[in-house]
Image (tube, rainbow, N blue to C red):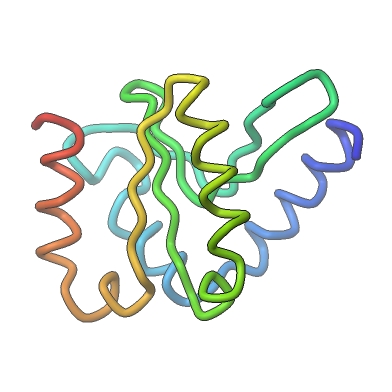
Length: 118
């Protein structure tokens, strides 16, 4: 895919976010979480013609937040490889299940704060 194609796809994902993504976005958008700016469905260039779309991205802290629904149970190897490539680019990655986001937001906040060193 070209950059313009992947960007178009990311925009579609923003329009059709999951309930967990919607909930998380409501908590972090407009610098609501620790004053940090987050983007959603953010495109990261890995190589000239290879891109990943991450659920949430904080450029200031080089942090990626991934929310995992049921599909991730079937693509763990892909997720590990993707995480490795992103870590090689200097990103920290933290994952939460959709259930964690909905049922235990306080723990999500605490883990995020720890990872961010805040």
